[in-house]
Length: 431
Image (cartoon, rainbow, N blue to C red):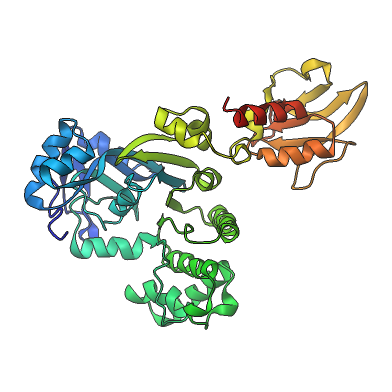
């Protein structure tokens, strides 16, 4: 497909300039250059996708395909009329800096095609896609040659489904590959490689050949290689899908722990909704090349935007989505004392924060849930984000209410065992 998209077509009101340092183009928008440029370069936005179309096929048919697309033709109709394959249609998406954003959809939905637009592996046919890198807003549409290579070497890293490792090289040599390609000096490369191998727990395997490692270990090598470049944006194309379920779950946990420590901007492609709900700060669902909904896991599950999304989430395991925040009964925080529903005790508050639980005139301390259930001599304090499976453990350990607080310790609500059962029953029953 070498003639697929040689140059962007009808770029939806943007022009590309080349006055940025190092030859990386800045983007200016014809309609409102100042406002749009400041939006794309805002400190909290890492990736800004606007009206992106992606077509595969002979360049001579591109304009006809775009006309058909604008007229409302389906993917199949565009293929039949123009021999062009529609990969992505009118996609708009913002990924905040430090966010783990998941692209979801069935096979052929366009999720991997959109991901590969972010690092230029797929050339955008029409629209705008900017990444915030090195304090600049870099436009991917029209980016070519040295400028694109520099962006990939320093600002973007990718982890592939099939690992993309060099089978004849050692673990150490694989992790060093990206650094050597961009010309880092040997001493610095060695230091970075050692740091990254320690980060992913593979220091003792540094001199082993890739073929000697398990699938899970090979994927950790891929992660270490991506992190070694210190790229601001990490793109992951179904990196765990080829692994056994237990290994996949462990690597998901490891990725979340690494993300807590490193706060990278990650775009992660998956076809596994349970995986997306577990790791994603935000989830974008795609169908036939189009984005149909973007939102938090709670928004996707509890407020589906279409029948397609509703069907997509219908069969999920409720233990994957329910949290303390979704099953609790909300309580006010303004008073000095708040009564619990059904007369099941009171909470004393100081500046909106619960400090003691009273039942039958007996005060009981409030103890944060820290992985192990709190016994009946106290009352558990839990965050809104605590998964319902952990709430079940706490409810089994003590008949006391479970008090829900926000990140500042302020009162949010309360959970009783019956609330957990009711929420599980509603999800399992499709309610």
